[in-house]
Length: 128
Length: 178
Image (cartoon, rainbow over all chains, first blue to last red; front, side, top):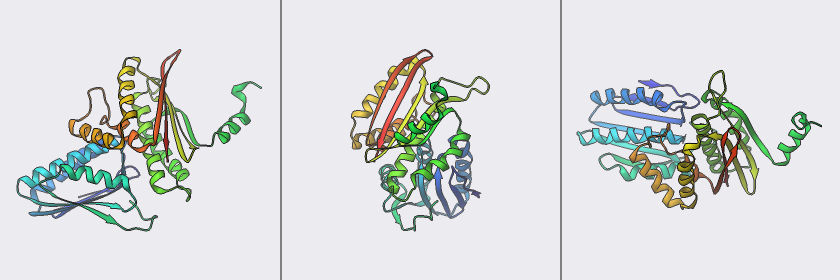
């Protein structure tokens, strides 16, 4: 399952072993966009492998989208408590203190999943 | 010359105050999508640190969405929200300004919230943001209720005031990013 990236929403790729979210997230209507994404994630998780990897690499997200990420992690925590082994990589660029702080804040609340803060190196043009 | 026809005056005024971008009129999410590009373009001039331009962009988006959601001045035909939003070069960074009419009955709550945010340090703001995220939005919020906390985290300082006008209370916001 794939949700193509748009100017205001990230790429989302779901498979039985992984989930990738990459780009920017400040949609016109967060519920309209996140509803189908969370629904797909739930369906994917039913058939997912016992080990599941999540890569999130956001360049920017607005405050409405923070709620989506919160719900997203909450669902993953639930799945993890039910027995899935979930590894989340929160990827951000070294100089991006905003995304680093955001990752640290989510990390504090995540106990069942493995949550890693991962620094990525890019030339500055290659983003999202 | 009549002030409203002073085209050169407009140009000089905008140049003198170093305003890079200004929009005043009906604002919609569609329009915000469109203007995001030129705004970002203005902020990526090669001289501005990327972390700074990201903070400016973040404040700009939150404040534009505040206008879209909460401005009580609407166009007659489509009911779109009207407001003004601008980005200027100021001090050692940027100034983000916004003006829109607000619901008079929400003024006191907004004022109390903003006063609380204006005196909070970064650590407290971070904690407030997390708490709001866990608690969910307040009843009268159309977003996540996080917008003003997010803005307060991204600015070096901000000011606001309310101006009583003929049509109601105008909310005036100024945030400095550097």
